[in-house]
Image (tube, rainbow, N blue to C red):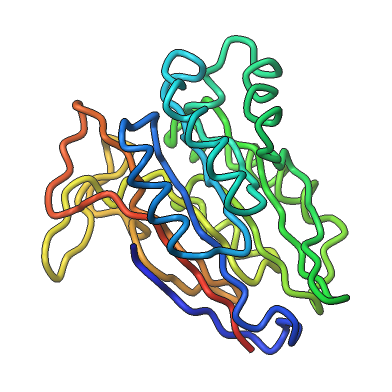
Length: 250
């Protein structure tokens, strides 16, 4: 488990030391018990799922359903879709299976997280079944969602965004989100010393910018998870699965 601390004077005193556990790109992996054990040991205040919890929509979701139930028993759990959730044939029925277990999906909307009379805001944007290249050619799909989601965003408050695709950070950073949680790029699949991730999810792009760790652009910081996937068609090299724990402090 990798741990990061994010500092901001906008964080209310009651939220000093508040912990987010990021679960990203699980892709219906078989190691439910290992993830649950690590999640419990982290003692998070909230768990956030940043997309691709399943693979190919409802086709591969049995382990993901078991994990979702147990995560919700550890802490309140919020999620956004990734491109793989968007492949579901019956999207509403698919999402309902997880929401019936306690997961709250944020589809271009926000929730207020409260503690001891104080609050911060958690936003989430719904992903798309389009490829990265298609979205690059039509960025308004993303901009429209961000404008809708953050139209009432108060920049004086501490605002957190869940957005599946880390490679959209340059557009996301144009808005007033203080902290962004993302995944999607699987750590670059292969990681090289002093170089980082090698591959993106767009075949034409090598050495993508945002594959793991913390990045800062404009007024936003983004924490990217390498993900928990175990897919045989994406052999991870020097790039083990990870959970990410983010603590926010004043």
